[in-house]
Image (tube, rainbow, N blue to C red; front, side, top):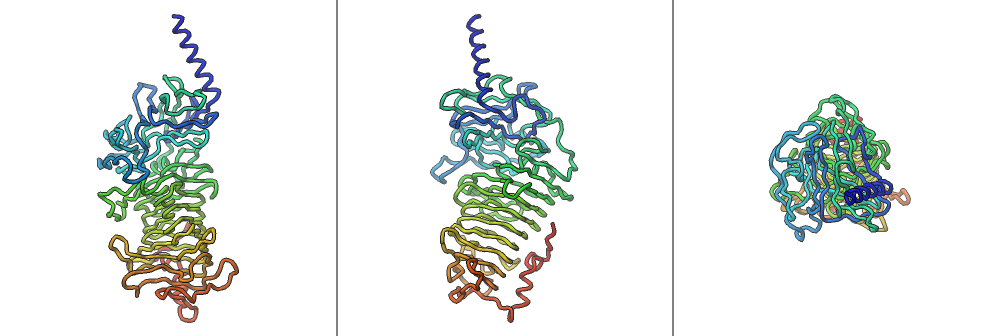
Length: 505
């Protein structure tokens, strides 16, 4: 009996010391928690993330295991073929109901999407109803803070949950944290109901004070092909998450402050590769790429305003990838690595800063850039893949500059997997340049008669004087006011470039 009392006393003491030194979010016994919340532990010192043990989320009403994150499973490939073979991508369709997935194959207590939890698989979670699923990091540590990412859409409204963390999942040098056990160590209760289904404005706040805690949670709530515009207002904060949606329409993502709303993730082509069985299928609505931080496929009327979107990984890794029509990007910082921005379908970009390592802009267009700034770390600014069906990339009053004195070309259009792009188009009107090689443009193979490498009134950033274009590539062309007045007027008009669409926002 005395031994039991001593053990109980020690457990109480340990819990007391834990409470004094570590803060939890949501706080223990918190109410009105968003079901899309992340779980955050702030320690007195930097924790070490282990490679074994589990994190469990359990329904307090019936002790049902709702979700489990198994640290034995690696997050995803990091070095291509040198890592264990990835599991087959799930192909089982499922029905999505706002708040949760109803397919029996999305089993609570396992990685979402039906992945088999063995040491030779990677973590998988379903994002935005993309049944192929994504690799993800179940726990991310920055300095003293560890953020736990439950599988998407498994927590529900009007539920009380308790969290258990096995010893070894997170450890401190002084061994003062040994996990969380039992039913009372960390509990929280979700909101009773979601926002009204016809809401025209949703608020996202990382601190849990909004309608949703994540950008993805808000996107998932909006029905596909919604006829009425919905504004997702994103409060200042860092949202470290992959955002992915498909078949969405009329959504405005409005950040509170361009530099203080940051959507980011360490994603790239190695970590979330094109699946080998669909890599060549890039038709609208089936676009297989999953390597960007923020992705929209087959979506129309998407407006991104006042925010920073970036990947924090190196490699082929866009910050932003948009597939669809009549999309607008305004007052946005976009940062990527091998590619920073990919756009396929009509898009209007204004007052944006786009920074990358190489092929900074990738895609098939048409894209109109107005008063944008492009910053290269040394790579070519764009790889243009438009066909004769639409225009390519047009830049009006934009700035192109490299850093650290490096020199590069404006564009390239080589053969890609046996495909040529004889109609590739990049047109610069009234743009300021720095760090561009004298030849200006990269090589184009095959017939170049329909290539539009055009410039009008390019000036130096340094002194505002006309650029010396005497050594420009022979396949490029300098437009003149005397001979090309109509062309200059046309290409200065977004509607002309974007197939008749007149951007309004």
